Amino acid sequence: QNSEVTEAEICTSSIDLETSAADAFPAFLDFIYSHPGTNVEATTTNAVALRYLSQYFGVRELFNNINSFIQRDLDADTAHIYLSESSIYHDEKILSHATKICAENFQAIGGKLASLLPAKLFRDVVCAPDLKCESKALSLCVAHLCETQPNEIDGTLLTALTDYRKMPEIDQSCALFLLRLSIEKKVEYSPIDGDRFNLRKRCISAATVGWKDILTTTSSQIPEETTLPADIKVDLLAAALREAKKEIVEEKIKAHTNNKKTRKIIEDKDSSLMDAMSNIFKARNDIGQKDQTLYMVRSKLYHIESLLSEMDDSLSSDLFSLVHDAKTIIDEHFIGDGEDEEESSSSSEESS
Image (cartoon, rainbow, N blue to C red; front, top):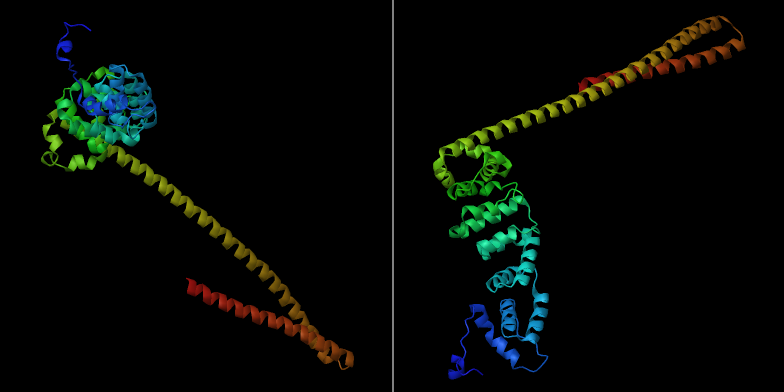
């Protein structure tokens, strides 16, 4: 023991701790003075602080115990807490793992991260190679962060958050806000890079999807637009007109396609109707030929009947009866056809 050290004279030591480490210190002491094999009273909020204390004071058993807890507890629901705490204690291992989990689950928890994480930690998640999030959903989360932490946002941070590789498309609802912010924060733009790299151009493109609103709404009705420079307003109106023209062309193509389909349906129906008419005329011709043959047979039977009536024997009487029956059958056929034709004519008139 060094008698020259101040702590040796007053028998006390002074340690500067972060707030969460100070809050976790009672649990740390309880573990030290507990029976061997006792688990530390760890929670999501104090786990990283206890890990820090175990390393600071060299308590190996506590270090192993708290690591086991963290392995079980660290997931998508708790990752943002571990991320914040590990950044305080510069715990790179926990920081890296928590960042990866946040990035992989960003589509589901991005809104929560934008509300709870500091802007720079949120940037680290967005820039992580493991980020999984649809572009427009990401733009909404970034816009929310910029609205809730305006003092933390500068041009460099905004550029990183809206990198075209992560955010090629921007949601229409936040396009004007991000456009105004890019101008306010003086986000650099190089024309050589092309429009897809340019945040302003992406915002204008997204905003003019609803081109009717841009063309019909006055500047006083859109708070974001009142701070836009004149050249940006011109770009907005020009883009809105281009979008309107594009929509008109698409509608014309669609209408032309529908007209072609309608004409094809009518042509098919006309063809079917002509085929049916042809079959009807053919059937009528067949019936006419049969009727003509029956007329000829009936006329012959009338002639035979007149000859048999002049004969006076029993054979002629039998033949006369037979011929008369055949003639009656033929006459009934013509009478039936006449009734059918009348009914057919009547129904055709009703149909017409």
